[in-house]
Image (cartoon, rainbow, N blue to C red; front, side, top):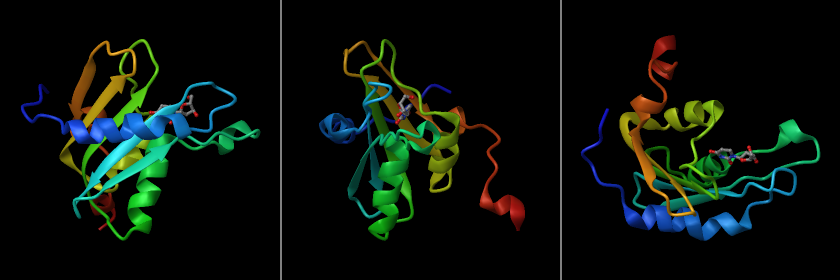
Length: 137
Ligand code: THU
């Protein structure tokens, strides 16, 4: 669905700022993520890879951990950036992780450091028909 809300530029700036701290020696693909929590704070994360490849974690997961550790449990907005030819798309697993703390209307802005545009989608757009906690009630 086309989004009418405008992304917060401070959030993408925070994602871009943290991206150089990524630990990505295997893929060489550094990703930065930033979340706006319902407490008003910005939480940042980077991908952290591992010699045992499947143990690596995505930037979004790092940002979620920072938010939860700070005591906040609701995401209001998300920004993700990488040096990719097109705006970077969160992986399927991260979509599910983000959905745990986000309502359907939460904005996800994806960008590339190459400055060639950004994609602005809602949580419902990137993970339609999500499996959520209420399904187990
Ligand atoms: N990656 C992220 O951190 N977030 C994304 O949205 C896409 C992919 C990471 C995982 C891995 O360290 C590297 O990018 C290449 O897949």
